[in-house]
Image (tube, rainbow, N blue to C red; front, side):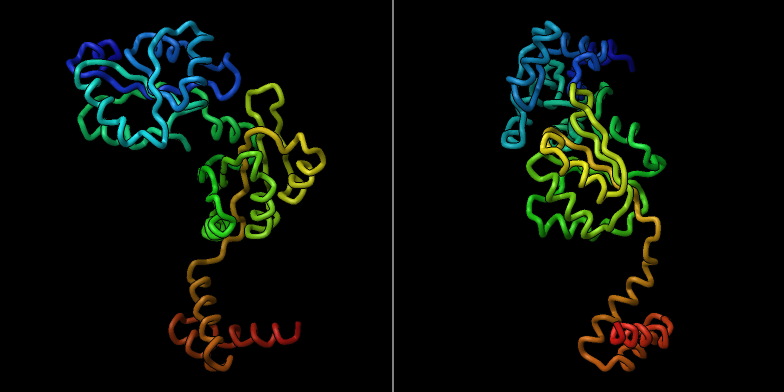
Length: 286
């Protein structure tokens, strides 16, 4: 169904519209047209959205939709859509719902049987990945890491054997701490950081993770802005079965003599009993 046919239907349409992440010239003609023609634009921050709409002479009314009011506001927006009004959803920058509000609204709109039309455009993670030089055949977008260091460590541990390229968003306030934790948990693997994408001071930092950390430390200005952190996947992941064997063996060592722990682990998992026991001998020699 064409956009014209959708607009003629009795119900309105929710357009999910990507907007520039820094450079206004990245705004698509289709996005400008949609934002100009809809009845309402739902945005994170009306002041920031106002700069965008003002730049393109878009007169459509703005409505604030953010993490704190999305649940309550969704009902009212659905009523407008059911009455035939068209609404555009935008974020402060880039593609909505990618580490931005909008998921709750979208789920309720879909459940209500209302049409959703994505208007593609800028997206920081895709822009960064396309210029990184890391493998792109498989990648895992992890968004922003947990706020607490303990949560970040746990999240990284769960990703340690992931073979796909890992992609994160990070702010200037935590970039150095997060990179240090990545080095500690994931090891010194290939890393690319994109800073201030599409903006005046856009820059890519490439090398091993330890080298990239030094590049950022070399000048405090390198630690300012918005970051996309990309890490090469684990090139030598631990076999899941071996990981289970090791976890079991380490746990049994806490309760039993090494030979007994090795024997029980071997009986349960089929592991090599002598190889397990040799681990203990090697540790005692180091």
